[in-house]
Image (cartoon, rainbow, N blue to C red):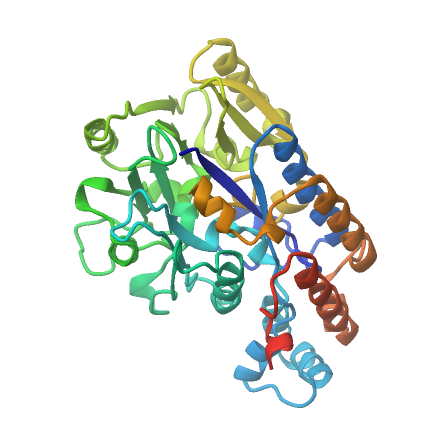
Length: 448
């Protein structure tokens, strides 16, 4: 049976803004308070989806969330009508209003961790929504994330959904941004690779000193248990605390994997050789041939990697077995990174081609091509069971482009978030979107 790795890209929401909310994310903090362009951001993301579809990849869409999150503000003591809640928050606690308006759900690499049916004990595709409890503005996402994923992958014969882990620091879970899967074929059993920044209970693991380590070992282990993964199909590795302190807040900012290949920076991990040997051994027992491509610090520094988001790229398998790297325009703008990529493709190795996309609106807020997509490995039967409304087609692309043009603003500043009209615009847009994507009622304003 044929199998696929489907990329479900997050559709940028109407309240896309530069709030500078993500401590430890250099791009997010450095662009704080600039005016954003939600319409341009959404169109840039859609253009990437359409381009991958045109290249022959199966591409899906994951809907944004309702923002501002009035219910979250009410939980913090603001009251009155929706308009009064927004105006009171703007007057008394503007940072909370900004957080409640964040469009960060666009980065669906953080939406959940996904294990394909070939790996799980019950033979279903498992989803665990990430609690994202390191940052308040992201911690409020998972209830809607779970409903949206449930509407996309609704057939319980093929799909299993788990609630987010307990919302405490010991189980900080950032989803697929710290998870990669290696396999010979997408439909065959593979090795799931969980990367953590710290341990909540074991002091033997060193922690970063400047920025928080968002993913815990204990969270990764809990997800593996929930998904019914076998010990010989799992590898845990610790991210280098020094690179976290350099702005590498997720593993997908310093490494990316696909198929049998790991593309990573020399400084990405602790105990790298031991980790590589374990991956090679476990994948080898499954008939795979694990391979790695290490980018030396002498050619690309960690700083250049963070500035360019070289590793926050999509590594995709071509039909001929070669691999394609999807990178942001910032990689071409960085002389050292671009020279490395030219040398890499010219060498005729595993990665044969690089394609560049303009994702400036997302990049300025700290998310590149890999942040914008959640990977789901599906066989033909499972793909047929996915809600067809969320699979990208040329007509859907046209419809969504028109939808963005109709509902999104060209410019958004922090002061605009206090406008109650923005909430009405967002709800009107999302109500229409759920009909386009055939999601049903998934947003609080549709349910309550």
